[in-house]
Image (cartoon, rainbow, N blue to C red; front, side):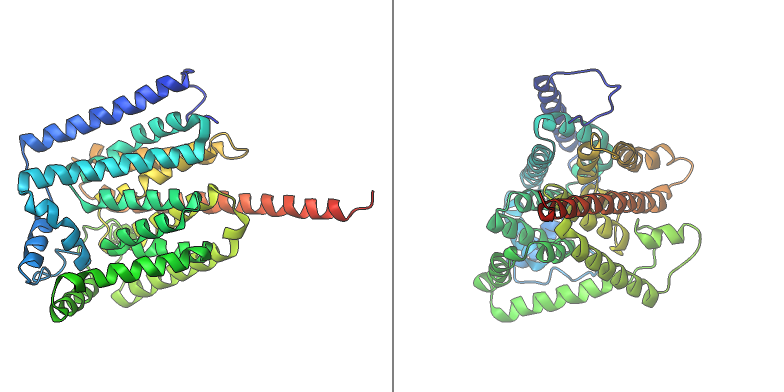
Length: 397
């Protein structure tokens, strides 16, 4: 299966491997050099250091609302990097986050594209790096969350339930991870027991480290912060509201909340109706696509850099469908989504600094529409094939 347009020159598989590995080594070197030249420029990890410092001192990491938008467990998990100091800790944080992302990206390419895995990995990486670069350079937690979403998809496709449960629960360090958990429980009921077990451990870990009263207060403050994050009016977020605010149409808070809930329920019902007709790896890829598209459109504090959650899966899905019957047009569409999210807002920055606030969610809608179209077509074909097989077995010889 080819992962790129047929107009590209024929390159043997080992050379695609060389190109992909060389590309990511170059990315590693470039972003490390940029960080070392100016460790504080455009870095967001200071928020994580402050939260870990507060947790180690049994203080409140949520003193300023809408700043540290993570679970209390995130402050605990980041504390080793805090103890390493700003320079060493930030560098280690970036290296580990990027290594986890690259590893998951490659693993999913291998599961979906088989012999052409290196080709799919290279093209999706090359076309997607522009949309991922800022998050990687800034040390954002979205890099490691993207890695956990990809790893979770891999483990679900491979039916490694305990590994999938662990990866999904670690993704909850940032609350956005709850979306994939909900969809995964519907499609993979066998996942529920290990997931609940790991989730219980995740919730109890803080009580093993701190006084119960302090831990309870952290969870209360976390919920209060989460409630505040759901109410935003600034025109600086790239979600469905960013799309409407770009044409001076503000969705009222109550309506906005209702739209998010209804959209989530509709997606859950649709997923429940069709997941059984999808085979792996398509089922896992659609799960990842649904999760990331929903987060891009309906997370009220979704930033342009958050699109790193959607881009790897979008690029790999393009590679997967390219050679499938009827899938080439969708592949070109998805490649265009990946490229324009990363490049177009930067090209137009001098003309308008808000292009990404409406273009990126618009592309998320295109991505979601393409996935729905392809998914419904695939499920219909598989259902028809199964029906034909049943009829043939019932036919007299």
